[in-house]
Image (cartoon, rainbow, N blue to C red; front, top):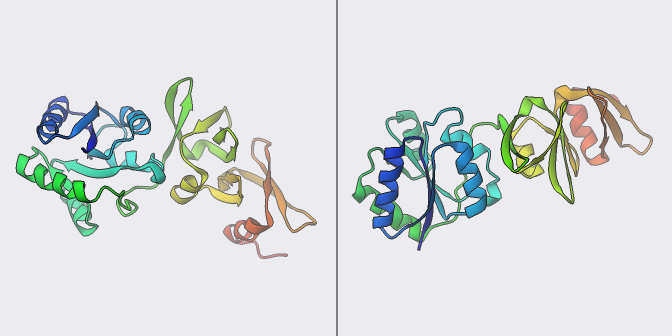
Length: 237
């Protein structure tokens, strides 16, 4: 049996879709009225599929996808009222979508396809760049703007973001942060925002270290030093 999460900021539309899904013997694990609620539920419940409204205030459905770790992403069915551009993008990339109000016959076809293929899609074509990073703070999820991040690092406790004011425990992996944001890889365990770098010191072992604008010292491994030099157009040896 397929398990699902329904995400829509309109209570009536959300309840109506959940009712249609239950009539199709889908287990509706929960409903969410906004992206932050959905983010917490997705990480906790791990549904097979999320029915995701596109137009939501503050954080849209597409922006929600950017906040999720690709390795933990369920199957996604987009739900939209009238966004012709989005519908064309979904059709071009073979993503499933439902138009509001959702027709039972159309939903039945979607579920028939889902029952045969529940592997996650590659959603890169419709996922916007990461503007905010979901982080834990006192049992809550906080969205930290990417342009406030000085650097990110990983240790046995997970992935952490460092800003001028605080350190946060992030929900995304370093790999996901590297691929979806402007953060630069400088070490197996470190990413840095280019604008946060104050100076780079070359070391005798062909590695380097850098200082951030707020005084943090970070390692730059030999493997990533050339990439860092190329980023800044620095060609001297």
